[in-house]
Amino acid sequence: MFQKNKVIYWGFWVLITIIFLYDTRYLITKASLPYFLVCGAVRVSLIVGMAWVNLQVLVPRYLFVKKYAVYISLVFLLVIGYLLLQSLYDCYLYGYVIGPNTGQLSGVLLYNFTHTSLYILLTVALKFSIDWYEQSKLMQEIRVEKLQTEVNYLRSQINPHFLFNALNNLYALTIKKSDLAPDVVLKLSELMEYMLYESDADFVPLEREINYLRNYLALERIRHGNEADIQLTVTGEADECSLPPFLILPLVENAFKHGISQTIQNAYLHIDLAITDELIVKVTNNKSNFQKDGETGGIGLANLKKRLILLYPDKHVLDITDGPIQFEVLLKIALSC
Image (cartoon, rainbow, N blue to C red; front, side):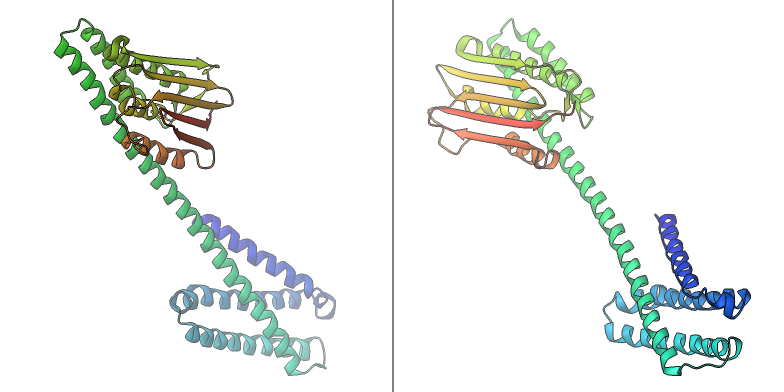
């Protein structure tokens, strides 16, 4: 960034030099080429020196710390010093080299004052613009790092939550001494492998996430047996598509927690995944007779809302319908395919 700023400043002064030389090109014929070059070198050197003192000394020591009166006074003195030196040289150049000076000293001073003020404003504006750009870029980097930290934190909350539910399922089967317990251990090991080794990336293949969900539902079907209607329907091709890990699971976990797990009869959970240029997830489950309106989510669902805001700002839709006997969630997000 420092090298880039040097290029910008050098480009600025090269442009100023070209403009001044073009404006005084008549000196080549009136005073000769050497005087033309010396005139340009003197003026540009004085302006560069004045700008350096202003930007490197006066601005950081007085303007940035809001000592405006001191800053303005010192800039005024700086301009006066420049005017004296430049006007003396102009009087020499136009009075003795080119010929008798027909102009007035006041005119020379006014010309130099207006041009000097313009150069000061331009250099200060350039510095503030560069500083603002650097600060904006730094703030953007900080925001991105903060978002990534929050996303990683939210992801870390999901895994223990799921593990707690899965171990509860296995515990229930071992209490019943079910022959399905070994199958549960196998599926749980596959899920843990995905959680520990395959889900560290910011985005994972959509197909892997769907397989993870299938295994999860298989565990739940084993636990609930024939007492619940659990269905997963997938339409569309998941090839080449990806999304952040564990983005669908909170919806399913929430449906089990507040629906099937608390319902004795006629419990159901229907999950529909439609894959096009976006992922459409529809989760429908019955509500428990003991569940009050508004009791629709826990840690998992709250984390999901935060993750969607961080990962898909203005690129997702999350609609929650809390009906009298049914709870429905519709999630739409843009896919990375």
